Picture 1 (cartoon, rainbow, N blue to C red):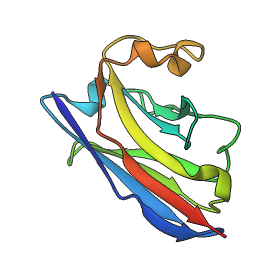
Picture 2 (cartoon, rainbow, N blue to C red):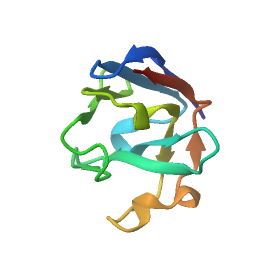
Picture 3 (cartoon, one colour):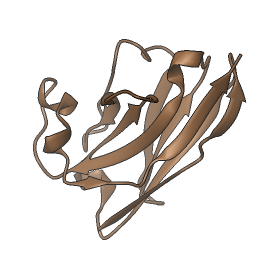
Length: 125
């Protein structure tokens, strides 16, 4: 199984980016797929998840600004990021889990079986 994250780049505060995560060897529609991010010098933290059902959840820091969605035909998950601010800077990782994740366990990195390589998002002032 391989996950490939892409779409990062440099963007001004207030701008938008869309990240993509594509998988080989795994069907996203049967998995929970999440985005985590790691700020410079920080820990990798949960951003958003989409369950196989299509339900979604967001961290408080991105709720209302980010949207996670899935394209089953392309076996891809996307993270649309709007109204970006400086605190959104970091390396973004997509991850997939074969487990049944709850609203509590979605935050736990060890619950995810597969990880992409990360894509860097830099928000400038």
